[in-house]
Image (tube, rainbow, N blue to C red):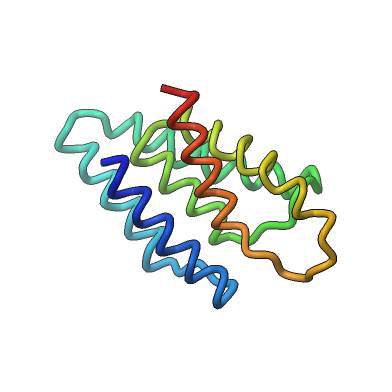
Length: 129
């Protein structure tokens, strides 16, 4: 599951770099698939909490003005949470925010954030499991 999710994150990162858009077709569909899998594997509540923590953690970064992220970024971390649980989602948000710090000093407008979410996910899996 981790490798499939990582592959999907890499594809989404490439698309985000090129277009600055993360499609709901990826994120919302991913969240729904994870929730459906949760129903059949008897961990629906864990998937739901993971999705909510993922979305809300990115929204909190926006509200605190630590990052300026779009809804696609929030749903992407929500998708990670739906598949992997709340702990990985929260760690992904923290690690991606830390990985983004050097990019904040680059004076380029509209830096794609999905690659940093992917880096955060890899670090979360390494250090959070």
